[in-house]
Length: 311
Image (cartoon, rainbow, N blue to C red):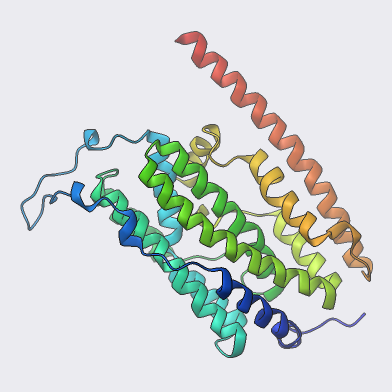
């Protein structure tokens, strides 16, 4: 079976990109970040304008919701790195290039809207947030799969859906209907992005099934969210998981499984030996995720019981 080069894959998938770009543009809704921010609540901060310094009591949001908002925002902040990655892989010409710029423009709204909401409502310490942004963006973004096109498509197929779920659940965790409405709007963008990338990978499974299958297996084996480079991410991720905002069960049942089902991955034909081996690895990985998710749920339940007993 012929192994297609990156250039050949880009050419073979161009019609799929064109079709899904047209689909995306027909479904994407215009929206404006400023409409989701309660500007009338804003107050001047301390500094050159001699306002009021931020204090812990300024925020009425639950601590874990603030943690999730910060993680989500810092993740969105690294957009320049993400743009560089996909522009390098997909190019800036034709339908591929049109998508790269459209996706970047849509994503740019997310960080703007979330930061404005957090600043105006004094939900988080703006000095700490800015320092975290500088640290995170100075490190940029890189993962094990950002040098190969099919691996990148597989990664974003899962990551965009995971991001959608994280935004929606974070909005609910805030208890603020305004924040929930904002993050639901952001999540709607992420869902359309996920569908675009998922459909491209489906096309790849038709033209290069074994290469695409290997890409999916490799990505799932060491998948991590793009915010993994955030300072203190592990501690924050545990808190987010304990709160049920995004945990292993959601990752397996609401992200990985639905995407695999959409691809009808276990029915794909025309695989070579490596493609079959990759599919077996995916099945084994699902079993591992089930075990890990169940163990986490047991530990979380035991922890909740201990907290309740102390209370």
